[in-house]
Image 1 (cartoon, rainbow, N blue to C red):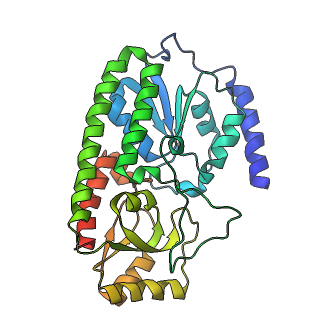
Image 2 (image 1 turned 180 degrees about the horizontal axis):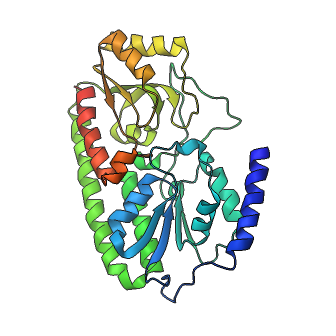
Image 3 (image 1 turned 90 degrees about the horizontal axis):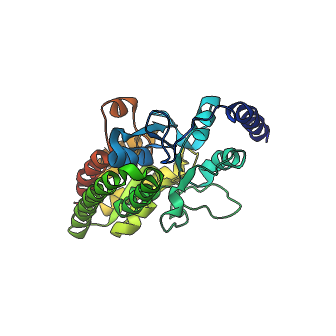
Length: 314
């Protein structure tokens, strides 16, 4: 409660200051440097905008590379960045409760706001056998909507529509880039379908959280993992680890997955006990500083996933 009150006070103080200094835009929705300003909270929408708009926009990502998104708290600079955005893109789940508090305190009449979870059909987080679930008052929707390339295509269409309406002068450029990018997503989707369609098995194991519900549903995969995708837990019980070890041994599953930027100790333990290969299945929620500086993209990371998934399902 103290954290919420402190954030609210901070937001109000900053907005009093910002209200008089928001960048002016022209009738085409462009800032004074000739470009519209777009802010994305996390990597996937940031990268989608980068693919559609290139350097024709001012683009920023709030979540620093290598940071944990589920415990993110905005700085005063972040709040000013949101206030000065022509288009603001966020996920829209429980982890973004801070976004709702900030937006409610702002005048957003001239801002286009996109919640990723509003662009696709969402599903509830699932607790499967052997998984440790957190106590929740009501079911939570899975926030990791971009992990399915098919969903990513829907998100890209929504972003492109917003870009075209906000910056009409570059609308044809945005539409063409979006069409090209969606074609690449469709090719990626076909590659995953080929892997799963020709697989010897349909079960994957995660010695980690599982942020791949939409991905698993799309490709008909069953899964076992230590925690749901948005869990804040990092240390599993001995019973959970034993369950996953037994599952791998009994079904002779060759791979145990972990996710990016996570604690790999559990996957290491399972690999040592079973002889399974530890591999990364990248959820693209965030990326390392090195990958960010090297220009890694959603497509790059998902193509790597194609190969690692093939090894897991052989």
